[in-house]
Length: 113
Image 1 (cartoon, helix red, strand yellow):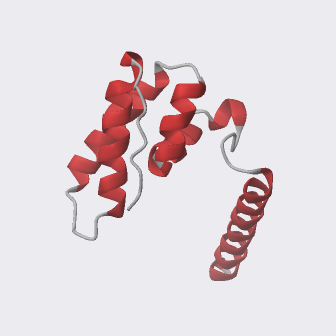
Image 2 (cartoon, rainbow, N blue to C red):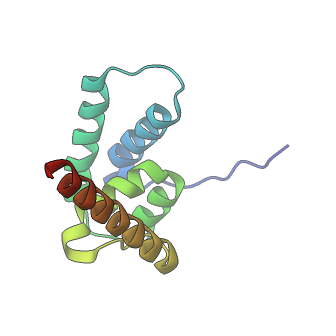
């Protein structure tokens, strides 16, 4: 049996944690989810995340809910890139994206010929 871990959620993160938990459940669900429901949760969570500055408590929430961490990173990509991902993972992701873009560009130019 696992011991339960208790974490006193700061008041300013309660809504974020609730939405992050809901998003994580939607992501992990094997059942079909209405697109509008998913978009609503993501929009609400994004709105809440935009209001926050990074701190230790927010980091704990984002570590607990990877889907919310990915959203947080995407919201801050313009300023910080893949700020929450380990460097090796970030580099590999960037290289994969570059390869896909190059492949699509080659396929596009081949289809035009």
